[in-house]
Length: 491
Image (cartoon, rainbow, N blue to C red):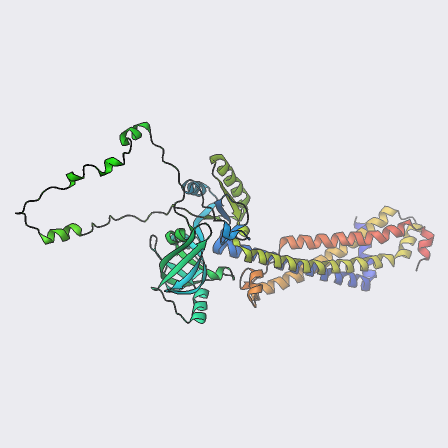
């Protein structure tokens, strides 16, 4: 093996110009593959990180349903004809999810769309997320910036309006909305008809990591969201009474409700003095008993789950599916991409287009490398013929060509990876800023900081190695078939 490596190294040094040309082409190909694929991998990771940390979590539990259901509702032509299913047996599902050791947090959510009005005037349209304010902020603490007002408290009515919605209303209608104002939210659907709720504006906010679809989302208290979405209770079943309870209640006789009313009245004495103060004392409402803030276990459309590590995603889906089947609960799970909506799918589609562009550039580089290696080996026909004539076996020649290719690929790979890694390190420090919303969707945020991807390194080296072996072996096999004397006479 040492002899083959020494011969290979001598041949590469002997043909310095050809070796340099092939080496540079290989280096360029490796740099293109490493940098291009690392950029795409970083963008993909950025999109996933942005969505899972800021509003989708890793997994989303919903009621059983056909079609494409996202956190914004159904995303197809039948959206107006179907209502979003609630999660059946929510309390039981919640307890099971929290018992899983790899679950970091949960957040229940309701979705609804509504017209925004004030008085008799319609001001705009908003997408509503019905939330528990405590659980929502615990799940996504880094993505909400309050610009005015404050969050509504658990059990309170209120809505946090999107900054983009407020700005649009002010620019189009000339109406300024401030915390404390009351607005009308009107939900309309085929199933529930028209529902109107008057809700106080608790505050105005914006998502720090956002997109065009998320910009129109406002946050509403759960009770009003349920009413607008047509949710009354989370689960309704007929009460089952024991025989003793039925015997105690007896049969309900409607007529008996209206008999014996005379006993409710008795003749009063004229000597009795009416004390007006007693009336007011009687009419005073009794103070409401103080109650601790309890978790809202009413009807919810979604239960968003954040895992301690995304590596548990497959395990979590399998465990939840088994639990639903075992308990007979008509519920299902979807991943973050399915729940994120059209914008995330658009980002992935655009990313795939860029992946295609990188692939085309890589193919061009591969073709150039192959052609260069074919020419390089073909020009050595006479040399190979001479080696065959003086007794070199075909296997020896094969190994020699392979060693040259591996040696050249190794050197070019090391140089290419060094250059590619340096480029990516510089881009990571500087950052690639998204100049518009289009690139912000692709990058998964306002700034992309690419990192060297291990998969891109492995792929680049594998591609260049395979291309080198194939490109050098093909012309070598043709030379091997030629008689040594004829090969020696080739120019």
